[in-house]
Length: 419
Ligand SMILES: *[C@@H]1O[C@H](CO)[C@@H](O)[C@H](O)[C@H]1NC(C)=O
Ligand SMILES: *[C@@H]1O[C@H](CO)[C@@H](O)[C@H](O)[C@H]1NC(C)=O
Ligand SMILES: [Zn+2]
Image (cartoon, rainbow, N blue to C red; front, top):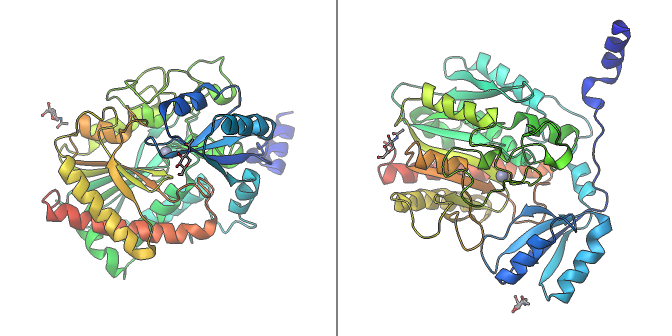
């Protein structure tokens, strides 16, 4: 019996046992939110019309990107028309874009021409750790809820450097973030890259390419547009009600605003601050392994929208003490990035009339750890393809972000945040 089971698993492969959700004829609409009534109307219809938010409007006059399954699209369009919303159809069939992200044949190793699985990324980390053992120090903050190691690397050419900390793919479906940051790691390590030589040698980089490892694997194998962790806050929960929005789970102004206490919400902050292992172990790793004051810049890498967002997220009433520095360094990033392909990033604090957030990584980095420059960076695009950028976009995105980081470090030096 046992032998048979082992054979079956060997034949079909563990990964294929889970059936994958399809998004045939799911559509994404871009809906302008001109006033609070429109904002509230959309929120009120979320459950009845099975709305799924891809991107929320950040202020009045901005737009939200909203996905709907085929069966509620007609009712949704009727609602939009009857209430005089301005809207447009952005994506006609979500499944088509998902299929286009899937390689016909996996290459296994990293060339940034396809999206990689966690196993492939980890196999590549193994190679780096061996090849660049004098520069690279591997670390693991601990295991995820489902028992996967959460791995990172420290890149340090010499002692005494100031540090930048980057966590990426905290939201499972934002695959472009780990694709981008692995390219950046390569730029820092491979010899003969004049553009990044200086920032590699004179800055220490702590990078976790995939923080939400369980969600990432789940988004590869089961539900492509999964966002949260896979921790069920209550054992009876199933489906969308599993998992925490890890970027609402940090222990700073937890659940104050812009987060949900409903486990079924995409923005569920978890049963308590740091309820999820991914976050409690991330913060204790930083607390216990990186001397206070070493990290000057903290980046939480996301997609999409093309923003550099600083604290505060929880209030639009005041700006933090270091807001001028945050904006100067964000400008350095955005100005360097736009020069490559003309991609425009907007920068400012998170909190505006509509979109407030608390319990996020950058808020914790500033509010608890006093890290002067803390950002959420939202990579391409502005919503044409959203989370489903084709693999051919990986290298352009990664190149422009690499140049953005070079500009960011230069700006931070200029104002004395980095020496
Ligand atoms: C729709 O958009 C147009 C142009 O952007 C704007 O002038 C108009 O007020 C909008 N209508 C509504 C109902 O929001
Ligand atoms: C951050 O600053 C506050 C207020 O100055 C201080 O109480 C706290 O100990 C600092 N925390 C760290 C980790 O340096
Ligand atoms: Zn995100």
